[in-house]
Image (cartoon, rainbow, N blue to C red; front, top):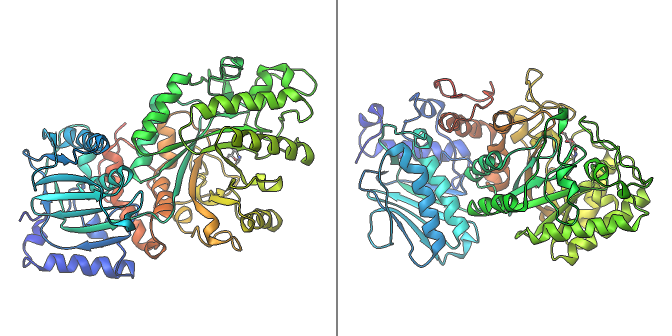
Length: 553
Ligand code: TNX
């Protein structure tokens, strides 16, 4: 048995394990929950190589049973996958791709025979695991991840990454040892919808930047990637039947930069990349407002037949599609048809927010037609919660983005819709809008919904947040990041980290694990991982980050 720290090796053999389990149980206050160890155990090694308790993972796993000998990778380790499925092999290759650069081990991905190594098993008959759950068992000689479905295996692999020392995330060779504490994690998500949104309209982000964010989401078991593809400042997807949307409407962005758009093949590349990380893309074309880029591209879409100039400011609510013109509905049909053909996922998001210059009747008319069109192409309607002020179709999902100053009447409208069957995804702006400043000193971001420090972002419960809404109306949580002030991956990193993992935990972890005091310790332990991945995160004073060298570049 390899012991991880001098402090521990001085203790009798069974004692560290016993202490570990006691800490796990008491810190979370519930016996099934995982939780954090003491602050000193989080940060005892500046390189993040301290022994890591089994439950020290974000999102908190549903159940953790520490015990037994740890597992250690070595230069002979194999990743053994279930040969019956190509997907298990791909996940094995993905894991090897994460582990090889830092460990320097060959880590061949081989067939499932053999009891040692990292074993990825599909086809568990444990129905409790559902489509996304997994078990991970670590003992001397092996770590075995078992799941019913590939998504569960993939999520289990993310847990394994976090159970290894932080340096495993580096892209160059690091010193081991590479050990995982002994025991079993059994884990399933609280909600089926765990999303993050990226606004590529206010500033355009390249395919490479988008993939980077996808990889970051996957670490925390997020499974929906909402792409905000159109707004006043830019149209970001090529549409064959209306080519000027992209070539002209996509030619600028906030501040007047060059903008850009995704060709269909680039867009497919994003969708496929997301799918390889078990994320479903939820594409959004915002309407009837937030449409200046489209209105500027085609004069005939405007009620007065005059195309407005391109727009590079950050005001909202001034643009509107024209409810009284037939061509408006041809346009919506063409766009949704082409988009649906590029969308393997269930949802198409039609926006519907901040239509301040559209009359109620016009709004209701356009949203009714748009919803019908989404249905025609076999997709489920998603819209911002203002959709509940029109007539949401059966099965529609409303994304709630209210905040503490949202009027009681507006909240009630959403609650009433939920009582009538509209499903909800919760994105409260004063909690999980990742573009809100942390403090007054935060350089990037906006603050119309207030300042959102890390604790405020984490400390709410999706089941009770919208009081009066039936708990089963809530499909999950999504953290949007709007990009008026953000121009590249560094900017996304600075705003999403460390709040994104908290939003992911709200979507994944059982309510019983929800506890800021233990969460902040688990979050602190992610600091060296962010650094190893080149993420220059906000060092919130609310979180006891371990000492570490300044973040790279
Ligand atoms: C509100 S939330 C918006 C966006 C802005 C964002 C900035 C919502 C559906 N609309 O148009 O980009 O605030 O935080």
